[in-house]
Length: 234
Image (cartoon, rainbow, N blue to C red; front, side, top):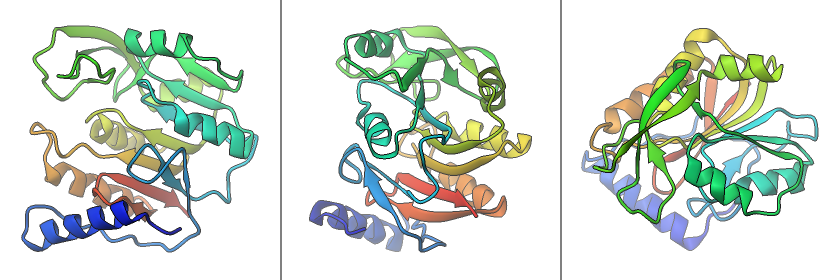
């Protein structure tokens, strides 16, 4: 898959930051066929390995917000059902205004490393829908429902997940730890790491990447900002 000029420039800046020690550069460990679904890399699109995906694949897209271009592209290109997860009422209201196929299924719950309720804060920009369990924005907190990945899979009757997309505003680190500790079967993981948040930092991303590689995943894609990663378990 070829990069856009903008994405290539981002990658060069990321590499330059790694040379001077302000960021770690992660090199893919696997060379496999990839495609970008839902837009350009780093601009709403996600790079994935398409070969295993088909109509009966189990696909979880966690973090809806107000952009489901990826979800709809998965439905169009593979004929699959997308189970989408987001606990925020603002996102629910946005989804309800869309004309969506039956194969887009919204679950009004977030993903965490425990079952119950979590404290979320809205983005600093009131026009943005995203909420975070990790990043302190100064906005009024909300208590919203969350579940562990294995609990969600049990509820839905799934014994594996073919593709898991995580864009959960800094909560991905705890979710990945819980997923690996529980041994649930996830074949392909697309994740946006939020080490840019001051509460997180690059070390957490480095640790999460190392843990996934140690668990048998291979890194096949990193976008030009060094934030969106693709992993596959061979």
